[in-house]
Length: 122
Image (cartoon, rainbow, N blue to C red; front, side, top):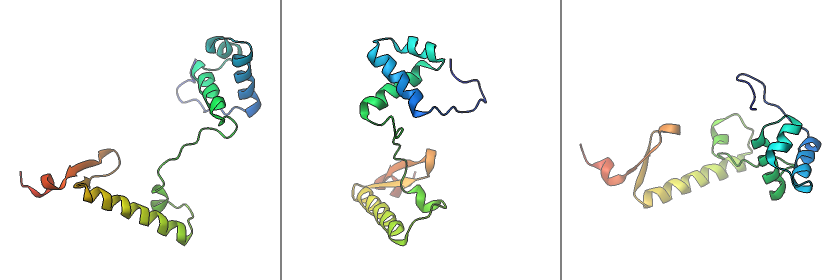
């Protein structure tokens, strides 16, 4: 029941999501039957119920993301916010060095190497 390949992501209004959740909770029906009635994916109903139970349905899922990406993108940060992020990044790097690790690569190819292994010749 998922969306077809190349299809648009659907945005559902809060009232629609709440209707699905209330139908599931109040009528004691299965995820599958609620999803079939509303013509949506079963996993979507499960996710909405989980968010509702956590009190996040209205705001949506909170995805913290990577705070350091703001340093490299065009996000508008004040001078103080930028300095705080750079300071935090340096503190993390300092702690990593105390434990004896270096980071090689970046993104998906990031690799943590011990300082001993980095200093020995292979």
